[in-house]
Length: 454
Image (cartoon, rainbow, N blue to C red; front, side):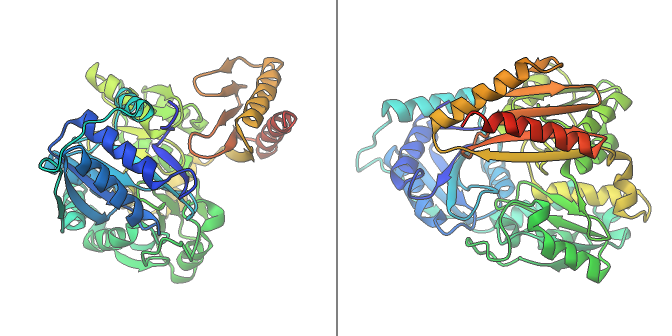
């Protein structure tokens, strides 16, 4: 697809992503959906209202009434769509820096659109073909209140509140000034936890930290946990569809580790896990230990959703899916990522451990060293040259490449993957091994090969 990447459309606001483009995307989506009503929501970014207004105008122009939800977490949008039976245009750039914004499209089942529907919408934009309402058919706009309240109530009902409350947990929460600020601290309090917060005021400039919940951005949370004797720290990205964790000492828990721990707790023989081609070896091992299958997809939520749906339709149970960036799905709950729910499921894991600290709970899944590196490019030509250099390197390697998404070389005890980002002008490199030096060496060798193509 030309417009939609691995998780919607994102770009620098008012440069790549313009009101005119958002208007056209909304008109195309409204035309393909052929719905009477469509919701519009946004995260906290400073350009969010501007683009939400453009989306609402585009939908109204093709005859859709518009429910304006305001600033809400992405999973709260999914909950609203499912309960109200309406699709949504969501203005968010998730974990990207504050100058970015983006568009994510959600179906009336509360799930991001499948690849085939996105392709139909994209084709409408590229061909400039939309429904056109006259002045008598233009859509009306209605502000909707209580969306976060309903979402919080539904989430709390879906987890074991009594077990979490009985565990008497102190939870430090870092919403990163994003949409989770209006929901997650309240949810964990209502689950019976003592809650401490940092970076918990909604602010699209992200003054306390960058939006992506990676170790280098979580110094405040790590310090808060370590100095207050909190049991666990939970951090979200800008739109609150991811959750990552900090243990009781203030140490960051790798997302692959928490994914593996939660998978181990819910897998049964014959189940399947759906993950992307950069899946960690620790998840591979958990699947093998539980006699469960592992299905790999190209990187990105849309691809994971599509494959999970296919398996569900074929009668295969998929209790968990996702990636090691904190974006975990629990399909029996909803086939969408929900940062607050991911956090609550991790709290259930702690409660079941009978008082064991986070570091002890995740220790069986922390044996591998993971390295991630990014190489930026200026334009498509430079990207293509760097990918050609990567391909030449792969062809000479002593391993069979997996080309599901980019190139993955699996050495048995270690692996390395190179692929272009679907949301940013970067070539991404991933490597993993039980030996830290080997993982670093694999990533460095691949990076040198990619940069030789500049």
